[in-house]
Figure 1 (cartoon, rainbow, N blue to C red):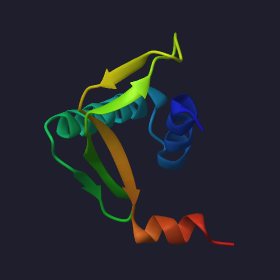
Figure 2: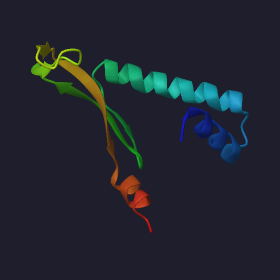
Figure 3: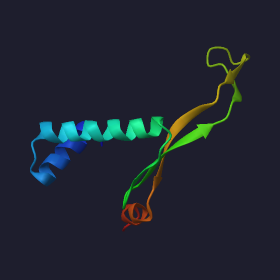
Figure 4: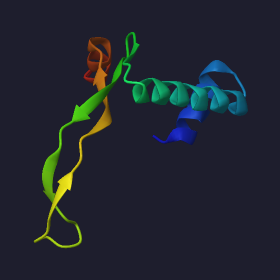
Length: 93
């Protein structure tokens, strides 16, 4: 499911116009992104937690030349940890 499909489904479920739902969706992703960039975690009860996950410096192999070793600098990546309720809904038969 992509962004436009999510917006369409939420619009149908709530009766709100797609343009309004799209604005809210964009605002939501921006707020979560800013919080993660600032090092905060974002918890949505019943859904899960978005959190920044630091990665250490490590050695890797160049994609252009497999014989060349490169150093990958330390960085932070976003991570998502689903809630127990989401796991139960996902695994429902």
